[in-house]
Amino acid sequence: MVMPGHLVGFGGMVGAVLRHIVSEAVARETFPVGTLTVNVVGSFVLGIVTFLGADSDVLLFVGTGACGSFTTFSSFSHDTVGLWEDGKQYKAVTFAFANIVGAVFAIGLAWFVAL
Image 1 (cartoon, rainbow, N blue to C red):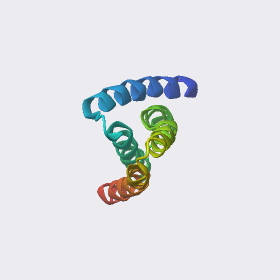
Image 2 (image 1 turned 135 degrees about the vertical axis):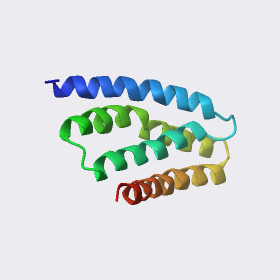
Image 3 (image 1 turned 30 degrees about the horizontal axis):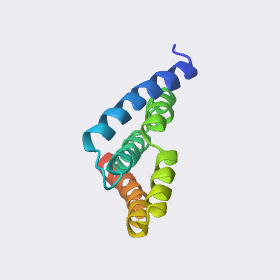
Image 4 (image 1 turned 120 degrees about the vertical axis):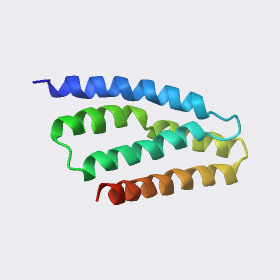
């Protein structure tokens, strides 16, 4: 039996590495697409494992560990404030809206797929 802390830790390692890879792959100078992508994809993945009724070990590894380190509220906040302070208020509001709506849509899609 794997200890819960190990599940979370190994999941966190996987999520952090994937976050870096995905963020680098979709990075754009003018808009924080990397942060948006990981937040929406992570919401979908967490929704899928939750709606499929994953057991507690899977939820610890995938949900708390991998999705917890893959998604990022701190970067979302930092990117939004950065856009705003750079005089790009429209992009800041668009970015915030896209993160929230994208995550909710992804969870809804996960629910639909898991049915």
